Image (tube, rainbow, N blue to C red; front, top):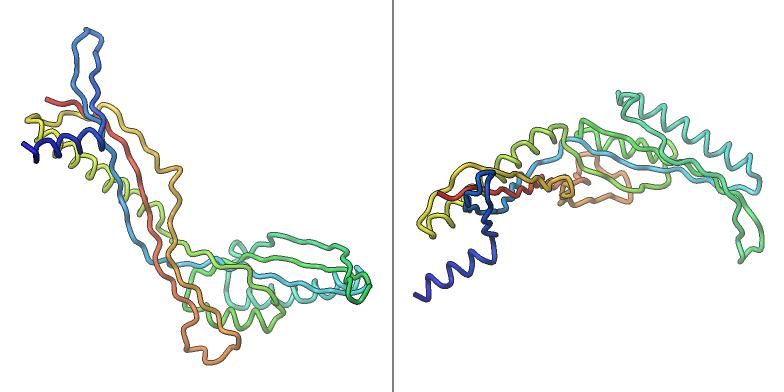
Length: 231
């Protein structure tokens, strides 16, 4: 008796039993369950955000130094056979600041670039070349998969299977059977891809054969809520 009480308490906490009426006024027993599907994926491309910043007493000098570095960086990136669509300027700024210790004003020019690397084996060479070309700031790395849509579909299928299995388990405990699905609600749009990487950068170039980037995994998650009829 205690075991059955626990089972039905779990049923009440984890699922919602719904009783509705159809157009003819006939009561239709229903059960609503949630399902979660997860797919772990190794990223196959990396988005690197780098920047250049230069200071000078005159605005024109700061901008000139920055433009020269950016031109060299873009030239190098193209030499790595990275397509134009995978290189994008994200932020450009030029502003005046004051050094209160030296009691003098200066101008700071900066520009940020986003580089999408679809061949991660080029990562070490790219990063070394970028720093040699003039990059003096690394703002971050994002990990992505070129097959995200396929993995999202797989996660949705797993979520539905889990929901169906939950409904079957609860229906069996009630001595009933699961009927047709009458309402499906997808809440995956608010669930971002979870990134579980480790990112390591070396202070010096060192041996290019040494690994300085650990890709980790992406976790593609799908959440679904389904209402089934009970028979």
